[in-house]
Structures are given as structure tokens and as C-alpha cells.
Image (cartoon, rainbow, N blue to C red; front, top):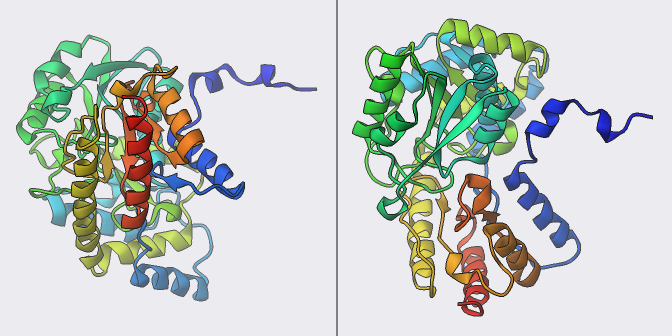
Amino acid sequence: MPTTQALASRIALISVSSTMKVAADADRLRREGNDVVDFGAGEPDFPTPENVKNAAIDAIHKNFTKYTNTAGTEELKQAICDGHTKDYGTAYNTKECIVTVGGKHGIFGLTQALVEPGDEVIIPVPYWVTYKDVVNFAGGKCVFVETDEQKGFALQAAMVERAITPKTKMIILNSPSNPSGAIFERKEMEKIVAIAKDKGIWVMTDECYHRFLYEGEPHSLAAIPGVKDTVVVAGSLSKTYAMTGWRIGFVLAPAAVVSGIAKLQSHSTSNPTSISQKAALEALRGPQESVGEMLAVYKKRRDYVIGRLRAMKGVTAQMPQGAFYAYPNVSAAYTGGITNSLQFSEKLLAEEFVAVVPGEAFGTNEHIRISYATSDKELQRGLDRLERFIAARV
């Protein structure tokens, strides 16, 4: 009989998503009757807008339930290109766009299409959990660049330039950042793109949280003139329109890259769900007020959460400039058998029934990630428990 020893060796190159594991652990405890406060999930607590839901219902009634083109419908791809042009001033056409089964799927496709075994990929720390695993799965080598926590996890072009070698194939940039909420300075990002273009290195810009900025206007690295052969975009509707379960993301890239991803997609997922594509079309072309409304609520929650964290003895917390996460340094509470963020998170869940994601999932061991995409009541309850847990150890 086949056993796990027969698994392909490439499966050992990746791990289970830490954020998904936290969600599963919290759900298990909840089903066992425990009162769990979940700060782990990286998804809006708002419902999908009514007009978007109605578009999906209408698609079902009109029997739009068959296969579509592997890369997505022409209408949705045009809406994605048009939306990116409107928001950032870019000029993509539908041959340079592919609709994916969520933003994560787009990042996976880009990495598989561009990274060869032995290629190096530069990733700023802290990083979103999936970057490391998709690079490893492609046979690439992750080269991590530490950011400056005392300056709000700032990244400078000089830091990246020092990490470049003849084997560097790609640089991954995520601003606003998951998990830190940091926004990298525009001039530094433009310097990085210029360096990458000069050396023939790809830059992947993960724009999942681009619409959730607390100050300033969103911008895209893809809008820099003359960088279409350097910058590739991974985007998602999941956070912007509270559509995490609908699984619609996209990639904007040179036509040859999109064609390669489509080839892979044709043998893996086929097309994204037809019904979800109709919903996504309405999200992009319909009213946009819900985005601003969510952002206003997130800002109030951010201010409350950071204020509470900074009042806790031994805790330091940088102010997130975007997204909906806090990334506090809780290492002062590593006592009584706790030596790392994983043990801290496990004990917090076991003793106080508060779910957070350990910083080790994002490349640091002094932090935890707290999602404040949850109700004010849950934030208060969870932070009260966290404060009690830390106070007993500091």
C-alpha cells in the first residue's frame, strides 16, 4: 500500500499555511465549546456588497454556469485593465491580463512561470507566509532582506541592492505589507525598480492591499514609465470588496508571461468560477463607496488597537500605514518556558482562547500578527485577554 513515504519530494519543500492553520485551530476550539477570539484571519469582517451578490445571483438565473476561457472572460479582463488604468495610470490590454483563483493563485502562477531551479528571489522581512513556500516549490532560493523595525519596517533600495547576485531572478514587494501594515517609500521603490530593470531582474508587486491606505493616494510600481518588461502585478478582489470566498485574483504582465501562466492554469484549475467572475465584474464597474467605508472603520480600529498595545507593559507596536494588521513585538513576555513566537501564540490560544499568527510565519520571531478586521467588541475582548496574558509574564 502507498504511504506518505511515497510523496513526491517537492511536497516536502512547502509547509501548511500558518494563517490557515491558526484558523483551523480556532475553529476546532470553537466547535468544542470554547469562547475563542480570532485575530488570525486575514479577511474583512464586512459582507460582500449587495450589488456584487446580486450580480452573482443574476448570473445563476441566466445560466452563466459553464466553462469560460481559461484566462477569464474578456469582459472581466477588460474591466481589470480599465480599473488599473483609472486607479494608477497604467496601460494594460487583455492579452496582458489573466484572472486567477484568488491573489495567491496569481502569485503561484507568476513564480512558477518566472523562477527556475537555483534562481534567487529577494524578499523583504517580514513577509507574507506564501512567498517563501511558492519560491521553494519552484526550486528557487529565498534571499531575505531585513527591514528596519524602528523606522516602521522601512525598506531602502540600498538594502535590496546589497542582496543582488548574478543569480537574482526576482524581487517581491508588498506595500502595504502583510503582516506589518508598512508602506515602503515611493522613491525607494522606484529606485529598486530602476536597479532591477538595469540588471534584468523581475519585480513582483503584490497589490492585494493597495486600496487600503490610511494616508496618501494608492500607486502602482507598474505605472513607472518603461517598466512593463520588469514589473509584474499580482492583484486581488478579496480584501478590497470583501470577497475572500469568491476566489478572484489577477495578474498583469507581459503577454508571454500571461500565456505561460494560462498554460499552467489550463492544466490545474481551468477557468476561475464563472459566477464569481460576474460578481467581480460588478465589483469593479459598480459603486465603489464600500471601499472607503471599510477603510474608515479599519482606521478607527487601527488607532484603538495600537493604543491598547502600546499601553501594555513590554510591548512595542509600530503604526500600520495600510492593510488591517498590527504586528507588535511581544518578546518581553518570552518567559516561563516561552522562547519564541510560536510558543507564545500556542499558550495564548490554550490559556486565553485568543488566536493570533506567530511572527515566525512571517520571518521574525519577536512578533505576533493581529488582524483587526473584526468587530469592536471582539477587539476589546481579545486585547483584554492578551493584556492579562502578557502582564502575568512581564
